[in-house]
Length: 69
Image 1 (cartoon, rainbow, N blue to C red):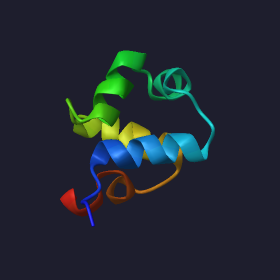
Image 2 (cartoon, rainbow, N blue to C red):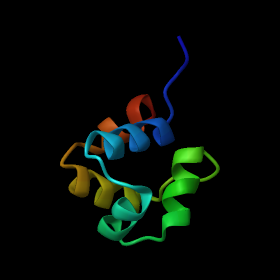
Image 3 (cartoon, rainbow, N blue to C red):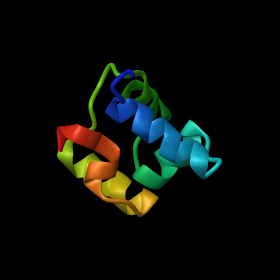
């Protein structure tokens, strides 16, 4: 079984809410390209963005980063 990445978790949480990348970007106060780079794995969210994502998704940071926390 493949290890889930932070980007996979962000994408899944976003899709569970039926949000587009643009929707999440507006809620997280970043640009859509930033969300795409997180989901694609080319960039990791900074700590402040992880906190904001946790608030937006109403989950813990560990739910976003998985075993990396």
